[in-house]
Amino acid sequence: MVLQVAMPKLELLELSSIDIPQIWNEKSLHCFQHLLTLSVSDCGNLKYLLSLSMSESLVNLQSLFVSGCELMEDIFCAEDAMVCRFI
View 1 (cartoon, rainbow, N blue to C red):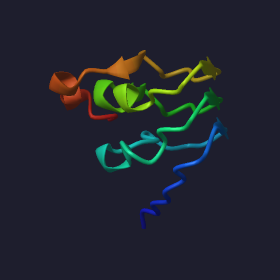
View 2 (view 1 turned 90 degrees about the vertical axis):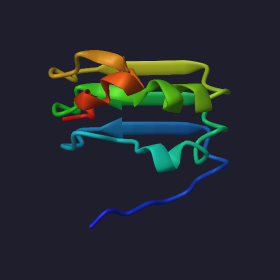
View 3 (view 1 turned 60 degrees about the vertical axis):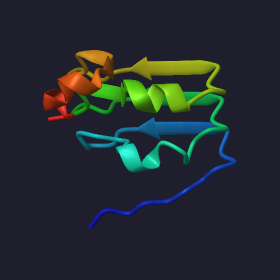
């Protein structure tokens, strides 16, 4: 079951110890436009944090903190490389 929640006024998001391969999907592009700070820690299955289109939608993001994500290859995954589709 996939739960989708829109939080258009959310400014701070901290994710820790989540055992999932993907945080975002392309349907969530408009949901976090007011996000100022994103902190992700100890999410061991993440290879990529954001797609390029998702990063472009985070127009107010001021701070990004990533730590303890051992499998992470890069912060951004290019759409044409979406073969990497967060596998």
